[in-house]
Length: 328
Image 1 (cartoon, rainbow, N blue to C red):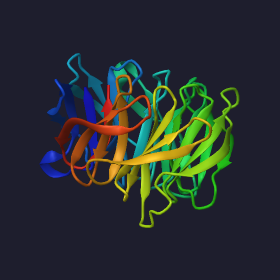
Image 2 (tube, rainbow, N blue to C red):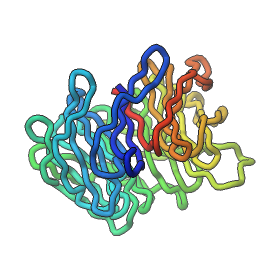
Image 3 (cartoon, helix red, strand yellow):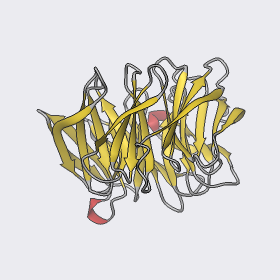
């Protein structure tokens, strides 16, 4: 199944449940929930789904995933901040981690029996707004938070008994970067940070033993001659680790970068719409989904594993203001 977050209002509001059958992507249902379920994350066992609702009084919702992929609401908790825009589930399955864009905080919620959400166990405040992402490293040892307003990537320990975070280290990106999201190389020793404010990606070394992030090189996500405004969104690394993919909002393209012999931009490809807010690989990485927020489309792009290039996969679906695409 493919679950779709959105900014849709009115009758179109909710989480979309779609499926790819015989090369055709179709919406099976829309599950009612609070407004603006902007980002989604699944539990490690695939039996629960969680959503942040990007509202002034932020909310997080939980859903049970049925055998047929259907969603059943399992309650809602305050996000302990304003306008949450990202969340992830800790590999232990015991906590949901979320980022409040409006108020700048990183929050931990405990997961109870049956996947239900409990109250927040920790709130890490920041004097600046625009926390943008929080996730666990591939080894499941450290939690990393990306904060656009502060310009930092922070590494935390998560105490699995108390549900509290403790800061271990912090990287300040270059001035004017605006770090938004990050993605790990499959080997877990490199991490790629997409910078929203200057259309770049920073390749960083990552030490799995300490959680320390060290910048190495920064590369543009669009060609040098692109002069108009562009704001990168999602960043993904191919399953083999050879390529990095970035959504470019403004240029309305997907930037493809090589990780071999240093990070470099290979090419950009039209995203099949406008404002590509989210990207997601499906299966073996031969299919890349793009959520085009402004043109109300989710588009499938075929990935050539030899050179990382993108082409049409011949499947697209109309859905209101998609902001997140999550194959489970």
